[in-house]
Amino acid sequence: MNFTEYQNESRKTALYPNVGNNFVYPTLGLSGEAGEVADKLKKTIRDDGGVLTEEKKREVGKELGDVLWYVSQVASELELSLDEIAQKNLEKLLSRMDRGVIKGSGDNR
Image (tube, rainbow, N blue to C red; front, side, top):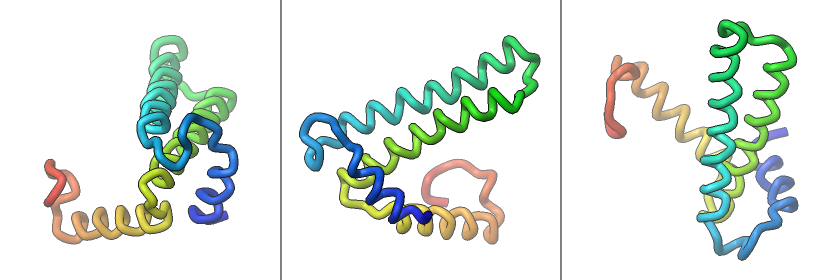
């Protein structure tokens, strides 16, 4: 599966108010799901000495799937292609690496 396929298929499950004209709802969902990923990993540090069990990895993977779903919906609401977003992001990162500024700060480096 590629990002376009995922974006198209996941859109079929987008059942929230004003789909197609509501970027706020999936943006808030994205924030919540990213927090759940962080929380599960935080608890791994607190409760398990930072050791990730296979079960915990699966749990984090499920939350990452939810993050992906919300990223896809935000992109769809903004009429952006996940394939293009991924490609442009890699181009940006590879350019930064080539120029020796991958460890720097700032958006336009």
